[in-house]
Length: 461
Image (cartoon, rainbow, N blue to C red; front, side, top):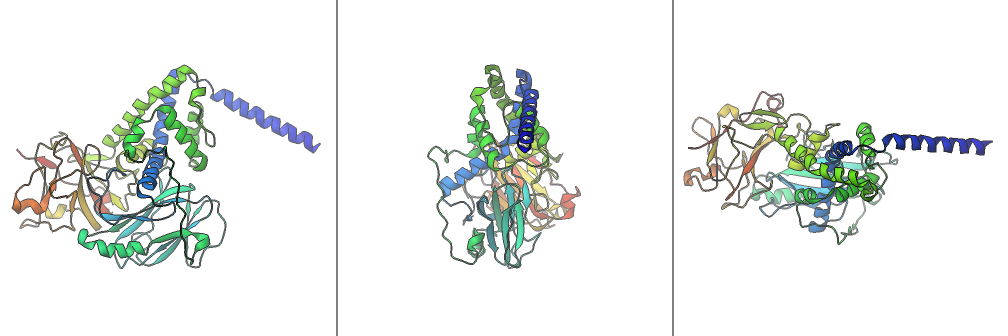
């Protein structure tokens, strides 16, 4: 009797699955192209995160579950992460919690502003231990999966990651190259090891880097070159070990209609020829959607776009998540930093390196922050550009020259504005277009509630 019931139950499940499959089958070519475009936008952040992880492992050679401490600011040769900063020294860790939790020892920062942004593989931020949230004192963190059960050291803080793999970007305030040695002391005491090795010496095993990984091409370039088969096949494999979020069911039902489902490999070759063509054709339109999303995100004022929603944690706003992954992978939640972006001047014209610009901050209009602020320039690759003084950002930790009334003028151009103005010079590329980001770390309420906005970038005649 029990066996009979078991067989009936199995048949019922099989019939239900068959029914679901039949309902999800055979979209038209037009509908398949729409679904594939949605799937691409949904998948983009996790795929570019994986490509970034590969570059980090392949170029830097630091194993998984270990901090890779960047000892100096990035320069014009840095291509691993789009729109990097020259404000903080990074301590980057890619984690894999599938075997056991990770224990992280954080030293007392002695008042230095820092944060440890923790992201799952979908690039959503799930915690940010640091100065703003947990304070500057020494602390012990235990990072585990959502289903892990076990004991943690007394006084430790348990943090659960929605995915078994993910990324920590540690940022420590760095007041110019002269401050490197002080930050290095903090970094050296910031350590990670498996929980089973807590309090013991630990030598991490090397993480193998497959020969077919392209670790030399910038991830944002590499992902643009992927065809539909390569892109969606990689995404499907990543979904096997990094579960979708609990509120993703509607889009998961949609993309199942073109053969994408959690826990299953993707077979592009098994799709009908007209569906293959439609899925491939969706890539271009989806990439356009992502790039337009970056251009239109946030509120525009004085030529700047400032996004005060949908940064760091995205819910089901997949376009916002993908656009940030394209234009600012690893961006902080707004409570930790906001990133007003200037893509054009006060007249609505794109920035060009053959022109000269200036930004005038009145004394009352200087960026309101509890930590610090900076202005960073990027070339058309969204990377730092080579320049005569190797300056990629300028801000309140630099020896800026204020005007007599306390106001500030910053000069943006490719050639020196003159010896008396070089302290306030942010060099533009030798050629081509560019863009800029203001960064306000630990912004004050005025910056978060719309009471403050950056002044316009004016073209000089």
